[in-house]
Image (cartoon, rainbow, N blue to C red; front, side, top):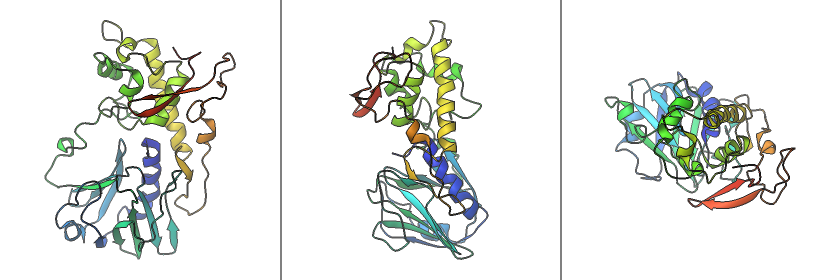
Length: 299
């Protein structure tokens, strides 16, 4: 599933081509994806201008000039393809190999025609993604999807003190807790595995044990915050980690290097990469998700 860096990669690919442009036609080809489309959404969007494209956690936020917002979750296999006006590219071709949109394919469910001959096509073969319309008179902080999100891990609002507050009363494993989007927004299975390995913390460790009795963060929790920010920043610069390839806004291939730097994710049975560790990477299942870790150096 696309995580924060992958969604940020898509945002950066779409923004230069959509921001400031008017939507001249909307083609919605089925009544729903994971959730139903808003009633008369095609008519409500036609004629509006895309103001900015932002990201919140794993969501794309397409802000329109009437103050309404299109919120897009890519789900498992969603992607956007830009065509027309001499360009054709998909910002983020994910490793699970979902279909790339052409504008006329069987899984091309949502198409925006943009002034200047551009077309933005949302393709989703599995239909786990969704496009949610936030009315202009609704405060986005009250929206049912956005209101439950925790802090952005790369923002100034996120530090060890904030994370300690969110973990203080958590009795579950740290791995599962960090995947809770109300604790911190945007983290997914891949990056949590990597962060915990880099900090030497077992995925089974109880989350609250990383917080002192007075509620302040331990040194290990401070390290978790530092590694979250470092790993996510590195992955964004590389174009994300679940990307098979990334075609940038220029249309040129820019192959990311981050996947080859995985320390534990997908490395079951291989030696731990730490020079001072002779352990073997193991895989267990937590909350129906694969966890990769080294039991020798992660405590």
